[in-house]
Image (cartoon, rainbow, N blue to C red):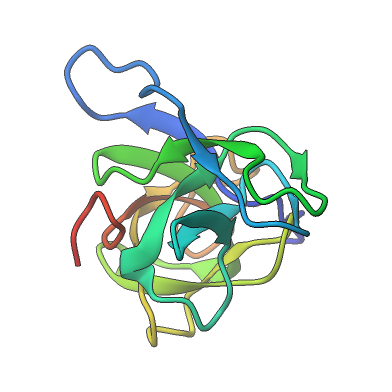
Length: 158
């Protein structure tokens, strides 16, 4: 099954009453192109795109609106905070199985193509909740589209 990578998508707020949490505007680092669904971290006080070498405890959230910054450092970036009670829909690089439920994994990829890497637990930040009901086949062992929540971030702890 081939699934197009698209970053993380807000799926559901698990708090009573649900809804989407308030969007935070954070000053962005200069010279970057950010896609909706990109994981964002704080570096020297500025919002910047996740890289494979980043520390999960610096994650502040997921980009809510595409942004291209020029030389200006303070362009505000819209971010949905990476609270541990929010479910995200994310593409897994490999087919997820029941054994992956509850396990923590790393992210991989750059802007616009971030995916959950279930072969990498080096810098885990997302914990798999289950297969996404939006997947073509939402059964374990056949789906690359999963639901996950942040297990590590500035808001979720480490």
